[in-house]
Amino acid sequence: MRVRTGRSGLGYPARTKRTAAAAEVAQNSGRPLTLIERRPFGRTGHSSTVTLFGAAALARVNQDQANRALDLLLRYGVNHIDTAARYGESELRIGPWMARHRKHFFLATKTGSRSAVEAREDIHRSLERLGVDQIDLIQLHSLGHPDDWDRAMGPGGALEAAVEARRLGLVRFIGVTGHGWAIPAMHRRSLARFDFDSVLLPYNFLMAQDQRYRDSVEELLKICRERNVAVQIIKSIARGPWATAEPTHTTWYQPLEAQTDIDRAIHWIIGSLPDAFVNTAGDLSILPKILDAASRFERAPSEEKMAQLLNATRMSSLFGLAG
Image (cartoon, rainbow, N blue to C red):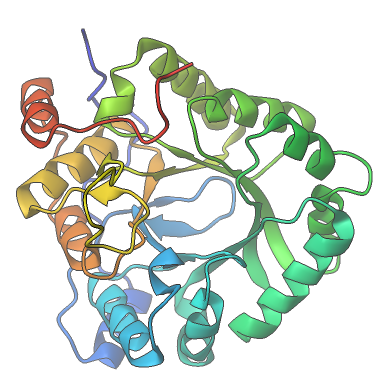
C-alpha cells in the first residue's frame, strides 16, 4: 500500500529565518531559541509554528508548572496556544502568561456547549479567565455526533453565539473540532453549512492504514486547501488505549514515549501534510520531546520506517474498529 509522504508543492520551507518578533521572544526568555517551522494558518494571516501547544496539558497543573511550560514554548518559538473551556484549569493557567506575552501568541479556545445561550456564557468566561479582550479563534468543541451537530448548527445553536462574538470583536475566527473515524465526513458537512476558518481532527500513521479513513481525510484536506481552511492534527503520537495498563501520563490514551518513536510520528505528520499543524499532546512531560522532534524536522520518514514503528510499539486504534 502506498502511503503519502511527499510534500504538496505549496512552497513551505523546512526552516524559517529568525524574525524580529522571535528574536525578541528569545531575548525576553533568556534562553537559546531553536525555531520550529512556521506555516500560514489558513486564511487568518497568521504564520503559526507547525506544532501548536495543546493546552489540555495544563488542565491539572499548578502555576509554576504552567510557567515552565511557557518558557519552553518561548525557547522553541511556539506562537500558537490551543485550549478549551473544558480543559480543567488550563485557561486560568494561561491567563497570567497573556499579561506579558499576548502579542507573541495566536490564542485559540473552544466551547463544548451546544446552545447559543450556553456558548455565549462560555466565550465571555473564557475571555475573563484568559485575561484578554479578544480570542483569535473560537472553536465548536467535539462536534462529531449528529444530534450535537444539529443542535449547535441549528437555530439558537452555539454557532450563532460564535458568529455574534465575531461581529462584536470578541473573537476573530471560528473553527470546529472532533474525534473518531467519522469526523472527516462531519467536518465536510460542517464546511458545507458554514465557512469555518479551521478544522481539527485525529490522524496518525496507524489511522492512515485504513483506506476509507485516509480517503475521507484526503477529501477534507482538498476542500480545506481550496478554501484556505487551517487543518489541525491531534493524536499524532497516540500509541493506543491504556486498557489494563496503569496510566503514567495525563493523556487519556497511551502515548509514544521514546524520542525516536516520537520523532518518526511527528516527522511523518509534518512531512506528509505540509499544510497542516500538529497539536502537542496533553501531557507536559512529553512536550519537550515533541518540540525537540519538530525543531529537527527535515523530511517525512519512509513507509518502511513507519511500518517498523507500528509493529514495534503495537499501535492500536483509540476509536475501536473503523466504521
